[in-house]
Length: 224
Image 1: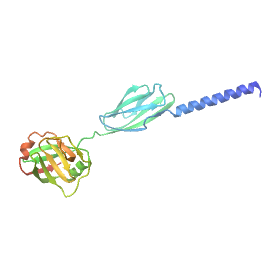
Image 2: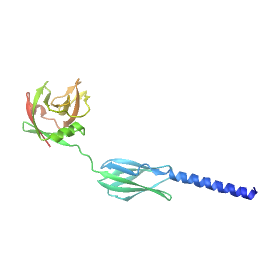
Image 3: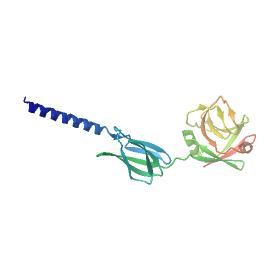
Image 4: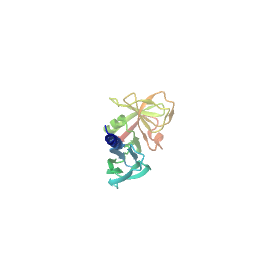
């Protein structure tokens, strides 16, 4: 083979390898997520992986729903402002990628009311299954029995669902499920209880609860 041909062959091979390497590098550059879902008030990170170069980030649409702040050359922090959909574009040279960000309404805890001897208390419910099941039964008027000078209880005909656990301290105003079907309202604090419960929720302000429930059995109205 002539020297000129050898040189041409080597040059062509080098260019081919270089082009392949470049194509491979570009193909490995991609966003950490093409879609994100964030609740109002929350934030998430977005990064263009596969490069350490400075990446251009821009909100293409939905500027009223999100804002972005650079945290690294190739990353930004997305903060959710209000419910809606935004699109964020990341550009590096001729390559660009877009992430669709869906901003959801801020989750708020469900509450219910307890009316005890003309005094009303607000219960902030947990997000568990048992709390949802109790909420679906409202309104309820229950005769609750006295026990141990710190709790009132009522047995339902069917069980609630959820994981039971032990609590080192049970506060006045805690609403629990015991043994699957027993609804318990604690009106005084307990420490080192040997029993396990499913927590339904808690009264936001338990001031006056002890006096409201009294010493014996009590009728309590549960409403939304």
